[in-house]
Length: 336
Picture (cartoon, one colour):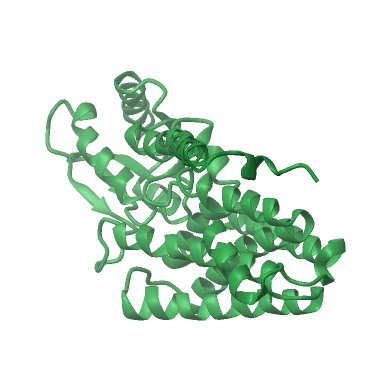
């Protein structure tokens, strides 16, 4: 039998190859994570202008001239309509013209970053005069900048990736794997509400809706990894990690807004589990579910596809990885 390529190389050659591969991966991952964060700017950001037609038209024109391509402006008749659009997650902010001048109505719960950017830019449409800011849908008072929400959501992606990998590598049989995915989704939803809502206080909506969204996201991410792993083996787990974390996380805009990322990456991120999960959880936590329809449908699609792959994969009933549970667990952790 001819020696394997790995055995034919000297230890020094193998060490240099590992170093080269690590740097190549680093060169790909650094811009993937850093570029979206370094290029945050409004791109077709939905906002509204409310007030009498001539005044609203003038405001919309000034916004378009000040930041070409930055905003998609909707004209509304009055402040009540503007606030309704904010609560329905149709726009991120509204410039409202009234007897005392222009006021900026915001929804920091949708994106504290967007609210802060628009508050800074408001002077450009008011000839330098101070613009009062009205927070229509505020962020949670315990997390006014949204940092806790974004940081608290990331572990759900990591643990879901790990759960899907471990179920693939350690568990025999379709039924057992499906049961494990269902149990993980339910427990993740309950634990997520206890931690984010009751303990940390960074979300403040219906516990049932929040738990449902967290559980659906956990199922979508874990089932995607488990399904791909059942069909493709270890390469499938790697592909699942790519979708759920390595690509999905930096494009998710959980800490900002998809309209702030370079396009089409912001839009693509909303079609991946982490982006859709973050959007759905914001809607459940702060907007009574408004604006969550597409995100929930995307998560449900990933969950169903992953479960079907687990159910239909030929190798779903085969034995776990050679080397026993300890070796399999080490492999799953390495994949994660």
